[in-house]
Image (spheres, rainbow, N blue to C red):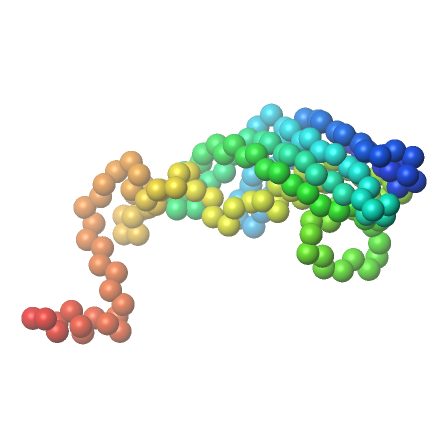
Length: 168
């Protein structure tokens, strides 16, 4: 769905408010696929600042399936994020910007593109099913959140292994 912002560009309107639930296709990242449950709720305001800059401020809320990076179990994650950024005309010479930048083409901006950009910008570096996830055993591969294995795990740096004999 596209929103026409030409009235804000031409100073004919002060603010545009949008509240939508939009379907988002699953996002394929390097090693994982993020699938959304029930679409993405997005709410934002677009307005002009100082008569020239077009800004956007809003909230996004969604539920998605993810895989824990420690124990490899699937889990559901609920996300609610605030975002803000600037909207500029899309051009050939796009520089690197410090703020989140959204582009409009001929005065039209795509809501799905905004939602996708905010979701990708706010993805965690490491997805965890819970903060204290124990992960999997490096020897037997069991999920340590559900089973306590009897594996003997000694992580000793081989360069320091001689220090073990020091106190004997």
